[in-house]
Image (cartoon, rainbow, N blue to C red):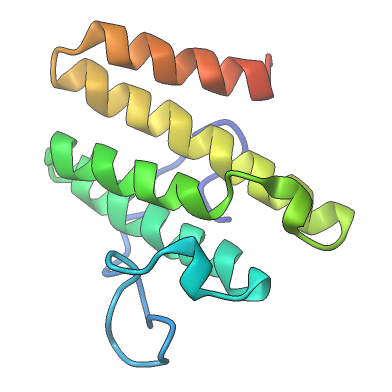
Length: 126
C-alpha cells in the first residue's frame, strides 16, 4: 500500500503507473469490471498515489474524485484471495475514505466530509 494503515503518509510519487494494457496510461478511465481480480488492488493503489499527488498540490476536487474512483476497485474486499489481500484492500479503502474526507473538508463540504469519515470509522473504528 505505501500510504500507511489509517490514511497516514501521502506519497509524492508521479503518475499512476502503467494501465491495464501495460502502457503508460492510468486507470482513470478503467472500470473495475475491465480488470481481473488480481489487477484490481494494484489499480486502486495506483489511483490512490495519483490522488495523493493531487491532494498535495491542492487540487481537492480532482483528488476526491480520484480517491472515490480508487474505492470502486476495493469496494468488495471479499473478492480478493487470501487474508493478506483482503486486509490490504480494507486498509486501502479506509485510507482512501479518510483522504477523500479531508478533500471534502478542504472544499468546504463538511457534510460530505462527515459521510466519508463515518464510512471509514465503520470499517476501522481505531
